[in-house]
Image 1: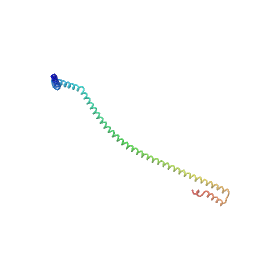
Image 2: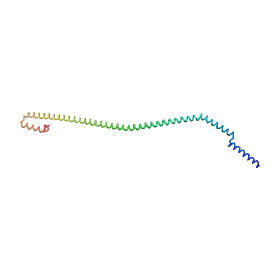
Image 3: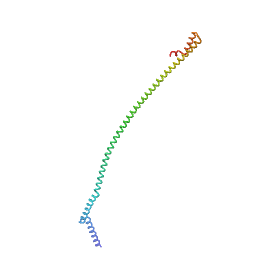
Image 4: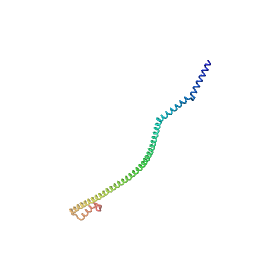
Length: 190
């Protein structure tokens, strides 16, 4: 039995050695198979490159170009936005200056209108005062005329009484003095 085992062991060893030679050994069949696989892979690579890789490369290149154009466009848009922002800032500064200008012009105009209104009010007040003074002078003249009329009336009454009573000269003088005293000296002076 030990001989059988020994021969089985030798046979297994030889079989293992042949397997190892076949796996790691470069015999003609292995080299031919390897060359056929490499040629098939090369043909498949060229065929796939023509059918898939080139369109994919073209698609990638087009995408790169589109992205580059978009980047360029975005850069231009950013520059334009910067210009518009500067213009906007300048207009804001100008708006503030224009607002200040308009406000100062409005203040000057309001002051002029105020001065004009005050002047017109002063002129109107002066006219009213002058009219009142004229009316006072007229009233004063009327009062003087009325006093003169009263004096004339009193004098005519006195004359009538004097004539009626046939008074003596002394009595007439006394009566005249009494009438003058009643009227007062101021009446005769005005």
